[in-house]
Structures are given as C-alpha cells and as structure tokens.
Image (tube, rainbow, N blue to C red):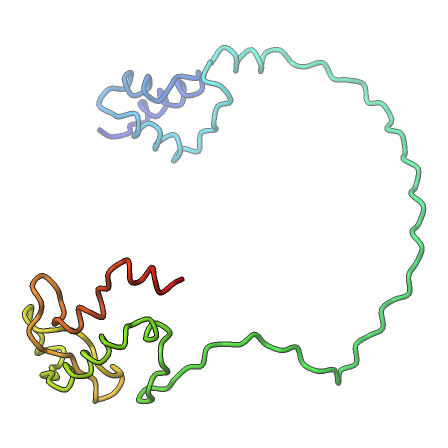
Length: 194
C-alpha cells in the first residue's frame, strides 16, 4: 500500500471530521490503524480536543461573544522592606572549602586493603582456605574448565594472579573449601549481624 495523493487527502478530510484512526483505516482499506496514526504524525496534523466531530465544528461555528475590556485596578505598591546592611565580602585569604573524602585509588600491583567482608568469614573457613591454596594448581584463566575451581587469588592487575584449580564440588564453581567461604548458610550470616 502506498500513500497516494488521493488517499492522503481522504485521510486529512476524515481526520478533520473527527473520525478515529480505526475508522479511517477501514475506509482506506489495506492499511492498519497504526499506519494511519503514523501518517497523521508525519503530516503534522493537529491533535483533536475531542473525538466527536460535531462538537469540534460547533465550537468553531459559534463564536464566543467578546467581553468588554474593563480597566484593571492598579494595586497599591507594597511598602518597601527595611534595608538590611549588605553582608561583608569574604576576604580572598579565607580557608578553602574542604572537599568530601574520596576513596583512595590503589595503583595496579599494590596489595588491596582488607575488605570488610573478610571479617565476616569464620576463622575455621579461612584456615581451610589457606591450607587448600597451598595445594592449589594455580591455573590461569585460559586453563580453567568446568571441573576446576574458579576461585580467584591475588590481584588481577599483577602477574601473581591465579585461580585455585582444584576439583569442584558437584554443581558448584568452587572446590569444597572455597564453597565453604562463598556459600554460607543463611542462619550463620543472620547471627553475625546481631
């Protein structure tokens, strides 16, 4: 379907009469309601105040009588507020405004500060992890498989970064020791908050 000049004129006429987009689409045939709405927008046709065409034509046909312009009363000027002395200018040698504290950026290769979550891990789990990491295979990212523990160790920005690599626990991405750290029971987490 193409928008011929005749179809566009019929669309404009029906739109001005207040016909709905569905009615116009049905009359034109071979076009959807959305196509009619799109064409109306592309043509820049005005939005209609109401969907009833007779209300729109009646509003245009019956001009409203103009009310005579009455002079508006001039309001009395408000009393001027008492002038307060102007604030003294701040000398240029005053102390600079302190900036809010920002997190320190740690350059690559530097050890990361201890994370708050490390305090939440039980000492037993940390002891197991340190023992397991001594036996770890120390794999690179390219050496990992679905059967190797994917627990990262170290700073990724350094050459001393590796993955555990021990056999994973069934259905988990980590070995038994790292599962104990990563997946903690809800009750133990709840107890630590108290």
